[in-house]
Length: 355
Ligand code: TXA
Ligand code: MG
Image: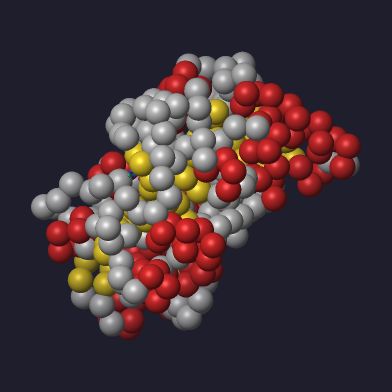
């Protein structure tokens, strides 16, 4: 499916009048079954009318996404939830009061009018109210919930800028709304509230620790635990697919900081001696230790928010630099580190070097 051209709308260059017209046009594209990519506080989404199975099918085609991998419906207010969810359990009320709008997706039992083409054939629907003025304005302009996966080609790192979105989606969708770079940089936390004890299906910016503090009891879907990854099928179908992968093979190097630095230096020299270019994903704390290869810095280890914010964009920069291999530092697997490591381990295709 190739469209003629993908229109890039740079929202910050428009007057208020021009902006109003741009959102009107974007809303009418969505209502008539087309595809519009838009910014959220997590990553860019690839939007279509969530209530229209044919429109949802266009998302799968544009992304080359597996048909059993359901989409998240994005809403602008609580009223829109009532056209999607069959019931709203008490834990969901607490979560929505606390974190909506925000980077939290909830799984509800779906109403019959939500097409199975949107939910990957499931009887549940994932819903999120994004905390981004452009996303909210687009949903309001469309007047319908907007189904939106991350706006990358399936398997690639999620885009966190409009230009990264264009790299994957040029000629495949109608329009991209450029609202700048996404603050959080990794996708929302997904919590299944159809379970008696709410269950985390994908870690994100809202952490296990924060959810436990609020609700008292939460579970984490077993396959998210590295010890169980191979034995169980994840409840979020998307979690079983290869994901976030840069073009070059990536290796996570784990251990004491100085041992990790020495091993990455050694591997970089080895790669060079074989005529290959290595990419290094490092932190402020280790930046000075690397003097060869393509060195990109995630930010400080003491600010995992910046690590999350930079991760996907830097993986795409390695593609542009054309490196042959990528060696990356790793992070502690708790709090926000759990969400960061969930993305990194998949980007690395589970390849680890323990030093
Ligand atoms: O931050 C985000 O959530 C971004 C922005 C655009 O909002 N969206 C996003 O969508 O990450 P996507 O499609 O890349 O990831 C959706 C995940 C997949 O792992 C999918 O399997 C899971 O949500 N999911 C969707 N509906 C589900 C359902 N009914 N039951 C279980 N998992 C579901
Ligand atoms: Mg995705």
